[in-house]
Image (cartoon, rainbow, N blue to C red):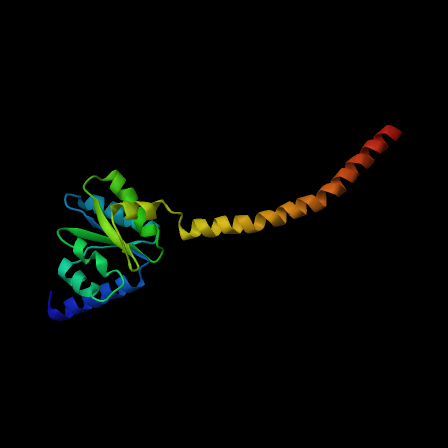
Length: 170
């Protein structure tokens, strides 16, 4: 890799570290190619990116970035999962770590906040942005449906009473 390629990688990683909601760092020593492909596939489904980069280049890219606290985690065979959604990358990494013992989460960063292993697990347990939006939409829509049901209920009650009176009269 020549100097220009290294500078391009550093610039690309710098952009990743600036724009990501969360970055999770893990060791992947001992995983097979099929395992890594499975990680990439599950990440792709959740709109999460997986990146293996030289630790030295990643440390250079981290200089002055909000998530610079993860530079201490970059030693050995490391892989980074990251996403704009602050929860998705942590969920993908945590779920993959449950299935594969050789995938060891070291920690991560959420903006300026450094995350240890327990922090990554806590973030992974949170609902995703889509789940929160659906929950809020359900809460907003519920009162409207209750009001519509309450308004329509007296009319159906009156119709039922009139039907009963008509049956008795006949």
